[in-house]
Length: 449
Image (cartoon, rainbow, N blue to C red):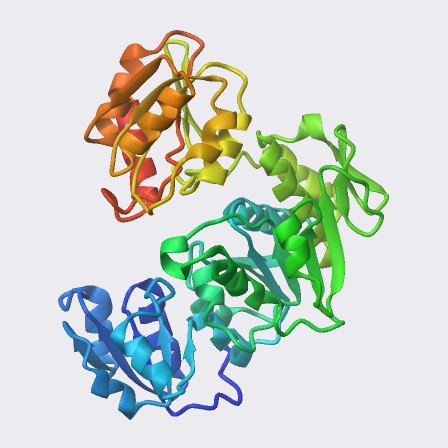
C-alpha cells in the first residue's frame, strides 16, 4: 500500500525541470490528487517518461519558460540543479511562493525514521555503508536521494519497518523548510559548488538546512575535527553524537589508530577494514554511529566493513595491467576529494585530472603532490593544473584534448609499480553529462589498453 501525502497545503503545483526527480515528483503529486503543471526548457517530448506524464493527464509546457505559468500555481517544486537565477524561480520568489525541492515532500509523506547524510565529500560512501551495516544486522533499509532512486518515490513505497537512508546535496537542502530527519549526519564542509551558491557562507547555509527542524528527540552526528562543521551546529537542539579520527569521544565514534570504537565499545580493528584511505575512516565512523543509533549490531557492522570495497567512481580499483594499477576516482569533483585520494596511496602516481573550470585555482592540491610523478591533463582546467604541476616541479606534465587520450598516454609513459589514478578535482560537465559517464569512459579505456 502506497504512503499518501498528509496535510499537504497546496492544490496546484508547478514542477520545474523534468529530469529524474522532476518526473518522479509529477507522478507522486498526481497520484495524490494534486493538480500538476510541469515546465522544462529542453525535455525530449518523445521520451518514454514525457509520454507517460502526458498519458496521466499532466499539463506540460516544454521549450520555453513563460513566467505567467507562476501566476497559476500555489507552489513550485524545482529540480535541485536549477539555479535560483532561473526566471521562473525568481518570479515565484517575488510572488512569495514556496520554492522547494522534492525532499520537502517527505515531511508530508512518511513518519518512518530518516537518516539524512550530507557534507562536501564522502556522502555516497557513508550512505552505502549505513545501508550495508543495517542490512547485515537484519534491519530493513532503503537508499535514495542524491544517489540512485528519487527520494519521494522511494518514500511513497516504504513500509513501516524500513529505514530511509538519504544522501543529500546542498542543492536539495536549499529547498527544504520542514524536512526533519531522525538522524542528521554532517561529514565535512569544504568550498564546493560556488558557481551555484555564490560563496562559501551561502553553501554552508544550504547545508545547515538539514538542522532547521531537529528537536531534542533527534540526533546529529557530526565531524568533531572540522571547525566549519563545529561552528555550524552551535544552535541545534538535537542530541549531539561526534565522530573523530583525532580524539576519543565517549558519546560518539572514534579511533585510536588501531581500532574503531562507538562510545566505549570496540567495533572492529582497522586492519580488517577493506576500504582504503584515511578519509574513508571518517566515513566509517559516521556510518557506525548512524547505524548503531537505529539498532545495527557489531557483527553486522563488522561484516559490512570487511566486505564493502567502495562505491563505483570513488577510489574504485579498476584493473592491474603489466604491473600498473588503475583507480577510478571520477566522483572527485573538487580539490578536497582529489587531495584525499592522493593521500591514500604510497606508490608513484600518474594523475589524470581536469574538467569544468569553475573559476578556482588549484594551489590547495600542492601539499598532496609529493608522490605524483606525472600529470595527464585535459578539459577546461588543463592549463591551470599544468601551472600547478610546474610549481610542484613534477617532471612529467602532458596536456591533451580528451580523457581517453590522456589515459592511453599515461599508460604509455608509466612503469611497472606505478599507480594510474583518475581523480579530476573538477566537475565533469565540460565534456561529460555526469561524473559516472566520465568514470565509465576511463574504465572502458583501461580495459581496451
